Length: 371
Ligand SMILES: *Cc1c(COP(=O)(O)O)cnc(C)c1O
Image (cartoon, rainbow, N blue to C red; front, side):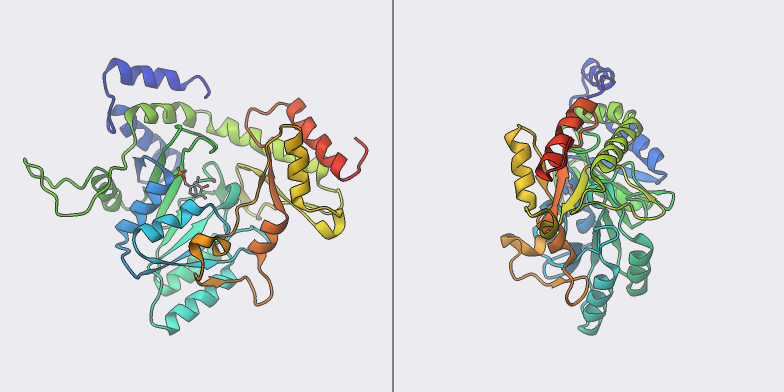
């Protein structure tokens, strides 16, 4: 927390707006929409809920197909299953670690030939890095398929001058405890389609028909954000830019210290984009270093430092066993390679230089570099 949140929380208490609606919710939605330059935003209980609402608004039902990035957190794809729809996973490409336009093209062509196009494509912006949106948008427009941007990790990132998450039909953000700004738990669904965002609010509050009695003709959810948590969000949004700066600086220091060591490759930054560097991610090439990434993770853990492997691709998850998957090329599984060698270093916005030096020293020690 930054300290600025308490003012808005106090307001909620003093005015007794302790509910999943209220002035903080309305204001937080407006402030996010202004920051992003979109017309509308709906504050919800989680990023997962926002993805679920987006699928619901696109009328995705039992048996429909949805394409989704494979290298991501499970929450990107779970709502596809909530709707009884069928995911098809798309591999990453090396420049951005995100959805491969080459694999997507192949998947679209196959879907078109089989007479069953996907009803949506969920594009993830991993660790703050934007996917190759121009290529992906061109392909999706060609087939008339709407894009849901899972920007849960990329609030504060930009693609060719536009905020990450504002290029598709819907953008989704998360304010979970680990994200760049947090409301403890929360999310936001944004779009330039006012009617759809109004409908999202309707669906997120149990889909109550405009009748004086309790009447329901649509299946709804209980997905709205609490007025207290929205207050936290308002305070957090004020420090977003500071945090992006801090995280980009952390990345630069890690890269300056470790980037030239043999077998170590940092996540690139796609040209004409700016990532929030939510997490500093890198890969270890075991054939050069002589040890796998797990050795590095363990060496850090032995010093009570938590680092994490890169997300396990969803097409490799037992939950999604048997799901169709399109690799980058016939003999290149980029996401599998990234999982094999990839890890995220501690990247908290409030890390001190001393904290960071401890991490750097351990990595150098593993690589037998004099500190
Ligand atoms: C965190 C995250 C989500 C889910 O957000 P919650 O608010 O935790 O539900 C979805 N997608 C990605 C890529 C995430 O990192």
